[in-house]
Image (cartoon, rainbow, N blue to C red; front, side, top):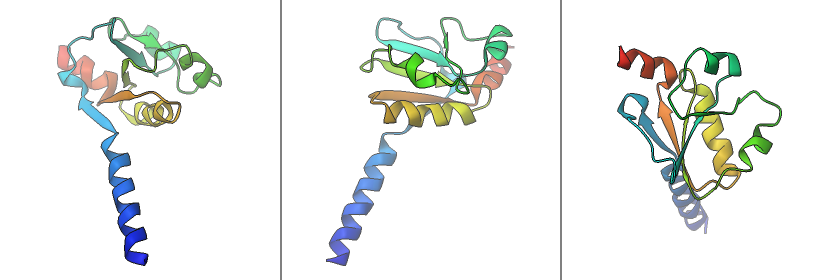
Amino acid sequence: MKNIIFFILLISAQLGLAQIESRPITEFKSFDSTKEILIDVRTPKEFDEGCIEGALNIDWFSADFNQQVASIDKDKTIYVYCKKGGRSLKSQARLKELGFLHVINLEGGYDMWHLSKD
């Protein structure tokens, strides 16, 4: 019986990890706004200093983060990035908890993307 429970927990953990998807931000070229949404979770100040064209700014630190993302279509693919990768990873997990079906964390963040454009 212990082996069966362990096996079920192991499979559940692997399925949960399989839902986490990340891509290097340097490979991100563009997105189709009819099917995809790009969310920048940095602060408005950081966003105003530069962002990826077409990004929607929803500050991870905002007290109403959940309310701001509530109006977004949960069936669309969501790309999320921040400055370096920490906030986007946390927001990816939150979006998954809120029922978003396909959330992709863009690893390396805006700093890496900006450096790759020079």
